[in-house]
Image 1 (cartoon, rainbow, N blue to C red):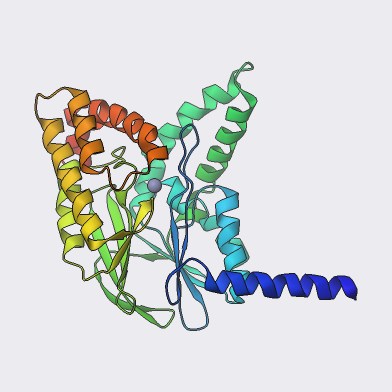
Image 2 (image 1 turned 90 degrees about the vertical axis):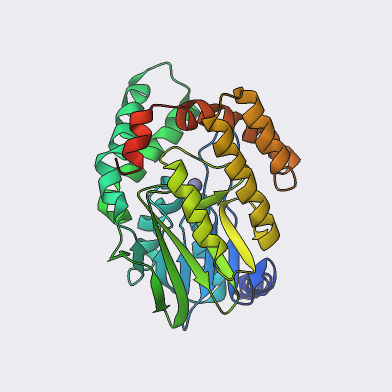
Length: 319
Ligand SMILES: [Zn+2]
């Protein structure tokens, strides 16, 4: 009995802190994703209160991140009613199967782009992982991480949407009125953002990321145009796919840094000048602890995306 009381008290305490701390606005909670060098990231998750259930925007990659979403739902004593995925990257859809298992009634809303990616980008990624796992001398920690990646890819249709988002518009989701945005061929073939007019919160997914933009599957010029669409939304705070929430002024700073980076990438300037330019423009947004990570990312993306294979970029931009 005593043990029961103690655990009940712990639950109440947890529930109290969970409801009070870290809310971006009333009924809007950020569960931050981890992004550190040498590890695969988790995207940020934003949870909105619906009527009698929660709306989860992005589900993370690692079990620990997804479990934090489930713990939050438990603490609030509310089911997860709806899930949105900003795009198909594993750090944003990886938790779908786990959440569906915990909440079988939750409907997943996303663009259909994951189905093509599963047979393209993700199939190629899988084919790169297998030979590393077959190497007897590969680092055991790396192997364990890669096995988790394989398991995510092999979840296949369990990551796919129930409701394919094919156009932008205002919808009632779990009783909450939200504006659903859809950008095509920006960061991926289909990028979804969610605007909550009640709190003026914009969940932007990887259309905005810190400490740097992530160009792996992007069409840079269409992405640039998509940022113009976000700028027209009447948001007070923008939650990026990675990094801390931004004010309107901070988003404008980020967007200028992005524009300069693209212009630099298209010029004959030295790669280091492009990297230094981003670091200067976005200095107020990049935490000191992430500067090295930002430089490392840009070092890769200037060569491989902004100045990479022109045909690959054309294909990503739709030919
Ligand atoms: Zn991401």
